[in-house]
Length: 419
Image (cartoon, rainbow, N blue to C red; front, side, top):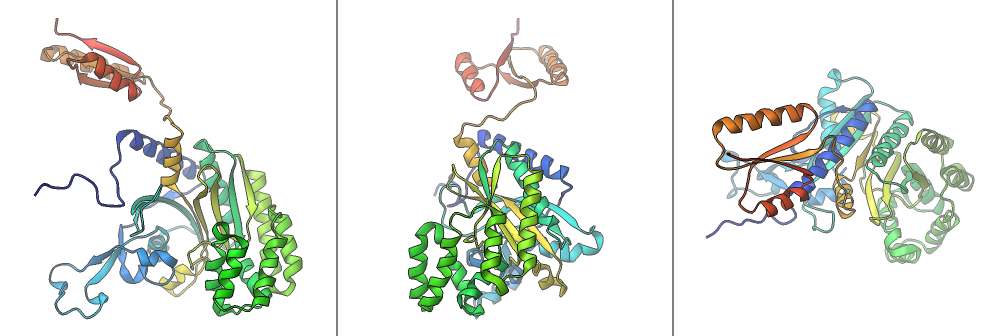
């Protein structure tokens, strides 16, 4: 039986053209984030299954690639439950591993700690455009900073990076988990029902106001509370400005929303607007939920009009590290949608800017060893002058060979013959 030459479903081989763009995007991300003081780190691809299944990852916990125990530890015949055969899992994001990493190394790290992490994650998801079962995530996080300086830095650094990659007119949608809770409490919902209500609310952009209304009523919620709740979103429909929208809610929700929440959101919006270098809009979106249950405060997403979907997001998760240590540590992070950004660049026909001219040296196959040495010396000198030099044997069909090299960006050819 022949071996399969195709990658497994939901994963892909990366061809040279895409790899060049991926390397370029990675270099821009690293360069920009380092200028903001973020430090690169790395965590393992696998974590203990108990860490990944701690009810903090939302729907992603249903998508874990679980790893069987190895060797003598694996005894399928006597297994009675999953824990008897599974002990590890492939990480589904970089936030849970970062929290474990910080908990394990806190005494060796500065406070606050600004982490940059780029790596593969795995989810047993249904593959679709721009979504794979193995994909790259790129996260920046600030651990140990309780003030909104963390949010300001994260949004400014991320938007600067997106701008450097050539994107304009995107949006940063922002909300606060405590605003979501205050709106639900004001409407008369019980706290135990918040998670279910927010899951339904998160579908607003897909099913609309009427769809959210119908689902809430189908779930048995009081119609008066549902109508009171949805009236808030109607009131805020045209209030995209963060300061305007938050101040309106502050007046409407009165005793349900702490003044500090509204003040913090206003400060974030004002500071980001003053410091931004990219062309984007900061938009207040009271329907923004973010699926992860570990978020405790500010939440945000990157919206790309050309993609019609989120292209990254994050927020504050002040309670996660405490799950490992017993002591809460303020934490906030922002993740760029690396795969979707690469997809958009490829669809736009993006070409990676090169610092030097790309030259191909075509060497006739009959050239002597002494001639090859001369060619290599010439190539060395050209590289030292900043050129990108490819040395290859000359094919019989030289015209076709040059056409292929031109598609790879080579703009000059130097031919070397035996004579």
